[in-house]
Length: 555
Image (spheres, rainbow, N blue to C red):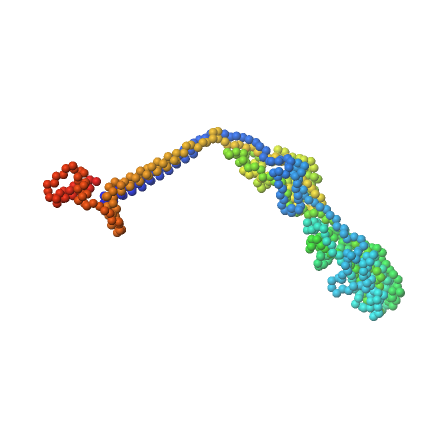
């Protein structure tokens, strides 16, 4: 039994050792082959070349080029035409003059001042303009306009309102100049007390005297921020001495002020107010024409102050505005060129790359508007260090740089070119300005590292290694099965199998065998031609068993 276990252990050890040996041999062979390949020197050739890398460099069509803009895209535009790429900076100039001439009732709406204000006795828009009439009368009888006398009606006022809608979004424009004019006239009775009058009667007093204010207001659309842009106070309207008791209109005479222009605010202030009300609403603002009447009770007796006509005859508001150009706005013509690696399947080394182009401007650049705006060169989104100021551009094509720009350090395998007009300042522009470029070139010199003889792959002997390995494993497997199983006769194998089954407690199917004596006798007769039996049958059996045992030991 111990001999059998030793035999099995030896076979298993031999099998495992053989597998380990084969695996080590394969790995060692592979490492040797790879090392041999890596340390083999191959001669290589350096093939120089030079090429113009930009496609459609003369802008004969739109092909290969595309435009991009950043920032306020309404400030710029681009187009390829006339064999050149154009960068257009969009400027605009507009004049507003919708408020002019004699006011019309269809445009202007009467309204009160904020607060507890009262209207004059009469107010209207007639063929002459916006008119108001009023008589302050302290008596309890009607005045000349049929309104009952009332001491509280000493400060009436009236406004005519008009809402203006602009044709443009004013957030994108700046008002560059503005003018306003408003014409008025008036007629009053000399019963009005003015600073030039000699007051008589009982306890005459005068703080501000009787007066009228003509004015123009600008307001936001909500009418919350009101700004006076023109006014006039005719202090001497109604000038003429009249005794306190003789204050009936029939006692006095008419006194007038002819057509007179209101006094406007300075133009810069007017621009500021216009911009301010349009900041609230970029399209709409409100304008008012106003008349304020302010009369005093100047006597102990009943006072009477008569204004026959207070007329705003015309109003003209004109202003100019230009387009805002916003800082950091840019427009670019771009091309995604071929890759450097497209030149060859072998390594390519770029030795030098030089970019150049021609450029011009439609009209000379106003440096005072934007001193920092420039043309930029970008490759792979990396900016070159030498921009071109727009102030250097002329109206004729000129070379961007004599000898071109060295852009070698910006070249990678990708070559994505961008020529950009960059607006670096906030400014206003009243007309379009076009910058044009042409004849864009990117000259690249390079070396291709190419082997003199293409490296061919050697024969693949791996199939032989695997075949031999499989053969050895097969031989070992067959040998192992023979030693363990097949070297025994079939009957012995069955008996051994039966013994194993019995030892393991498994139920096995019964088998039919010859008697032991018959088997021994049969094997003995095969070994000996003649067998002489000199003993009894029991002695013969005993001898035959000894011979059979000797046979088993030999096997």
